[in-house]
Length: 121
Image (cartoon, rainbow, N blue to C red; front, top):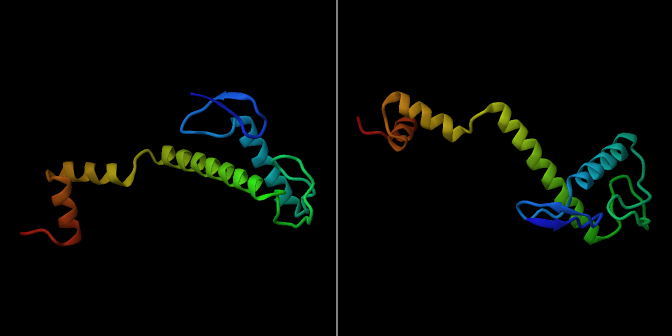
């Protein structure tokens, strides 16, 4: 599905109702990390570049609209980190429990009941 980035306006191949291109997501992440590392006040919005009226150490945007867009970028980055973490692990807890149940020769439901101590002997 073709979408347009809300930050730079470029067309990109979007999935799951994405609002931003990958370039902008990475750029915003880097800008925010640099500002946090230096413990500097951010003079300009990291989304649109407008001047922030009252610069503070923890303020990176100029308006509620830009703040909402920044939160969306944070969510994208959190999802990326979770996917990488899950890829390293290889299986979810559910997959692992189903595998244990099958190895025990039990159904998943019965296995979980036994594990909780509710199984009928």
